[in-house]
Length: 108
Image (tube, rainbow, N blue to C red):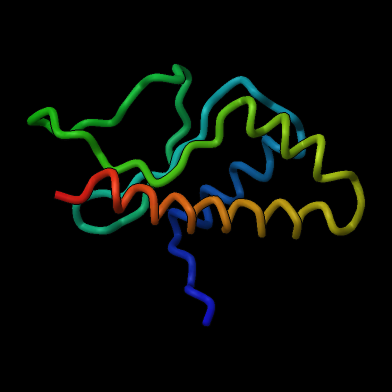
């Protein structure tokens, strides 16, 4: 059964798809999960920048699309009518994998 994507995940996919199609590697694209479970798409200028709460606790990062990832996906995606669906499936797969890893990394 397919899991419905949140608005934050959809924003992440749209934003990443645009930069992958253009091969724009100027920024990092991240998907965070806030304490209340809301997913938030954030674009970073600095690759090692982290989101933190007021008391210094890190915000849970689900996945990161770096310049290397963007270039790799751009080169593999091709340029035909299947390009966008292929990129979308890849990004959804990245989110699902990131959920599993972040669960292990952030569990207390």
